[in-house]
Amino acid sequence: MFEGQPAEIASNTIIGNGRRAQIARLATELFHRKGYAATSMRELASVSGIEAPSLYNHFSSKETLLHEICFGMADAFVSTAQRISAMDLSVTDRLALAIKEHLRLLFSDREAVGVFVHEWRHLSDPSLQAFKTLRLDYEQFFARLFQEGMNQGVFVQGDPLWLGRQLLLLMNGSMHSAIRPDAEALIPLAQRFLDLWLYGIAHSTSAPNQTH
Amino acid sequence: MFEGQPAEIASNTIIGNGRRAQIARLATELFHRKGYAATSMRELASVSGIEAPSLYNHFSSKETLLHEICFGMADAFVSTAQRISAMDLSVTDRLALAIKEHLRLLFSDREAVGVFVHEWRHLSDPSLQAFKTLRLDYEQFFARLFQEGMNQGVFVQGDPLWLGRQLLLLMNGSMHSAIRPDAEALIPLAQRFLDLWLYGIAHSTSAPNQTH
DNA sequence: AAGATACGAACGATCGTTAGTTCGTATTGC
DNA sequence: GCAATACGAACTAACGATCGTTCGTATCTT
Image 1 (cartoon, rainbow over the protein chains, first blue to last red):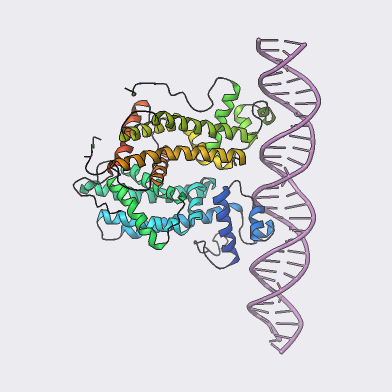
Image 2 (image 1 turned 60 degrees about the vertical axis):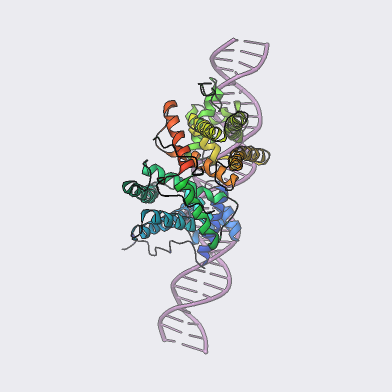
């Protein structure tokens, strides 16, 4: 009758106390460390302390695990972007906030972000398209910020989508750095990114030569 | 003076006219598009127009293919860095040249770079350690540039290795952008990176607030 | 003649997954 | 209160497919 509708949408966040969430966490770590394709269900079962077929009492397939991880992160990013977009702040302040919140999400679950960033391509096609759409939404959120800043004359001209993607690359990549900032260390890190992005590394004594 | 020289790039990766090089190229494209672990020897054989066992007349194992791709790129990057290090140029000019040459290598073989960046972790242990060493060499080349600039007072203070890795992330990630620049379009792209890196996106009217 | 290159057959291992079953615990009917 | 029942979560066995790879052999080129 209603079998088209998944009985339970499940908490899109991977966090939880149940066995299911516990396995999802272990899967996240494995997918992050070894890659999705190079991780077997038997290995996941092994670190979970059960046998491989028992995993299917919790997840209907290997790809379901990947799906939940990727979309869990994507939803978190997109909803954060929507929240910031609705705020009545200056462009620069919204950019600063977006950087801070992105970094916060990033370091709140490095493994999940790693999977989100690198393993999404192993999704198959209905999910794959949906994922790409969500990711583009998020990139365009940053692009709109840059565009707005250009229109107001506070940012130099440039391709806003290019800038957005570059900024995201930069932040996502910063995960690989050794230090795992706690809640307090996050603010200086965000400031570091914002300063680098806004002002560059050149001392202002040497005058900019903006010829593009 | 050093600007005009080798117009030909001398592509890093396995070039050649032989069947072996042809297969290596197809492997590079497959590893790039689907990932090393998700690419089977039978699939590689199929796109090569032969059967899977015939591949072993050219390569002794699947990992040999990965090894050649990864180390081919790594050697190209490191030797370019050594060449630039030996030049008698200002720090900023060497940084500009390093960016330009890195981008040139990057876009000379996007697929190989993609494998170099993402698939190296599937190497096994003697090769894996050697690869990490090479990559650190290259990162430290940029770190030394930044450190030198800081010592001379032309760059603001910061963690040089962090900056080096961030710059590399930024450039490597730029591969994903849609446009594939030709030899001429490379210079503006490099300039774009340099400007972004040196001066940021803020108009200089808004004064920098460097407090780190 | 001989090396390079291709083939078909097949090996053992591992893959994701299904099926059938057991066991313990919670929920229900009386 | 207590047996009957339903269910979550684990197990063993095993399926068909695919994995990387080896072997022996045939064919082409030089």
